[in-house]
Length: 188
View 1 (tube, rainbow, N blue to C red):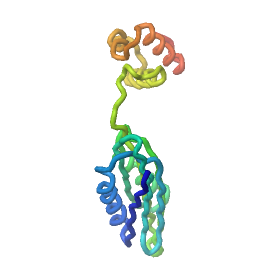
View 2 (view 1 turned 135 degrees about the vertical axis):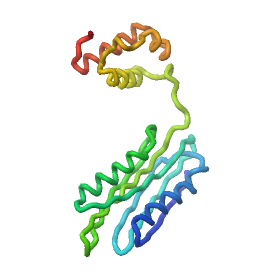
View 3 (view 1 turned 45 degrees about the vertical axis):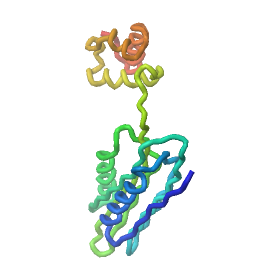
View 4 (view 1 turned 180 degrees about the vertical axis):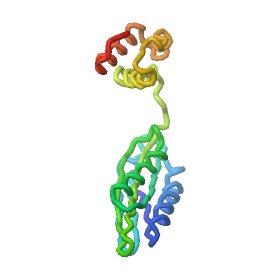
C-alpha cells in the first residue's frame, strides 16, 4: 500500500479542476495497483482548494482515474445537476466508483453559483467471459437485451445464447421466464 496526494489551489475554479485531472493522469497512468480508498477535500473561499488522497493497493492491477468538472448557474440545484451530467458523460461505462464529492460556491457580488463534481474510480483490466457469468449476472444481461426488444423473447436465438453462456437452452428459457415474471409480462 502507498498513499498519493494530488492537490491544487487556485482563484480560478476551471484552473483548479483542470490541474487536478492533469496531475492525476501523470500520477496514475503508469502506476501499478488499484485505488483501495480515497479522501476528497474540496473547499472554497478566496481560493478553491481541491486535495485528493488515494490509498493504492498493489494486490491487483486496475486502470485508475479521477474526473472533475464544474458548472455554474443561478440556482445551486441547476449547477450541481449540470456538473454531475458532465461527469456522467465522461465516466467510463465499466468504472467502479471509489469516492465522489460535490461542492458549491456562491460568489459574493454576482451571486452566481458554481458547482464542482469530483469522482475517483477504478476499471477492471480483465473482462469476465460470458461462460463465467453467474445466474444473476446472466439474467441481468438478458434483461438488458430483452428491454431493447420490448420484452419480446421471440426475437432471441435461444440456442445461440445458451451456447454463448455455456448453459442449456432450458436454463435460458427459465431465465427469460423469470425476467418476464418480474416485469409482470406474460410470455407471448
